[in-house]
Image (cartoon, rainbow, N blue to C red; front, side):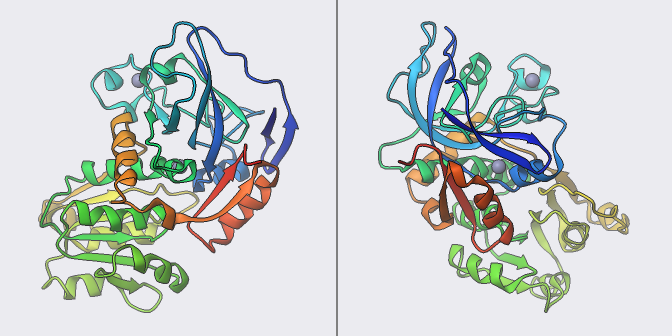
Length: 348
Ligand SMILES: [Zn+2]
Ligand SMILES: [Zn+2]
């Protein structure tokens, strides 16, 4: 079979490798779609502590089960499956108590476990027992179901930020996750929504996901000033930074309402440390928190929201590439001309 082997930083090659052999406690998935995540491109350029070379990355996956080990009952041959990325170890304090995104081992598909940029992948014992393995309805395409992984992370982000009906929301950064936050905000009953983005191109793309939001181009307008002005100086109940910049995080803290939640969703890389007047946090009694990844139940919910068209997965898919053209898929992602790029290892 063919696989995209990441051999070193900035070095990925399509190779013929042996088909995976299915153990008694494992299953083999024929990968139909694997979406490109910003983190894949970061791993490609800079590596990651959890990714050892040679490696197969890719963690936003959907496909079909083609082989099942004799001890496996969770899936059967022919099942159409969507996969999430984070796999709870199932054993540590965090995993045993339903907080697997804090697992100290922090297993993930496309990190320690070979991912979706290959024709066939192994679902090992841990993935099958504890991981985000969700059966998808026939009505969904594999490409749409692959979008459930990032959506699950967005759901976890709003859940941990205690989002609830009647609250106001600001989303800073309107990439795919930011647009998902806009769509989810309808389901969560958000009152007033601010959508903030530096580049106008991205801002225009984001508008269709929640037309009644107040869109702010931060290159032209100061988002903190606008949010405060349009909330009578109060600020928003929840501010989520999907943009991984110090500037976004500082702005989010400055626009938060008393008792509000700031979710530093996007991590920072090569960014200066925050310098913020912490008395804002002190006097406003607000919560500055983060979220990272998702749990299997979030992934299950994500698949169901896509199936109900509460989140319109189709609208995120900008372009599809065969596995052979994975480098072009990464470049296309980096040009930021669209929202999601999908690699289809078994397209033909
Ligand atoms: Zn991802
Ligand atoms: Zn664990």
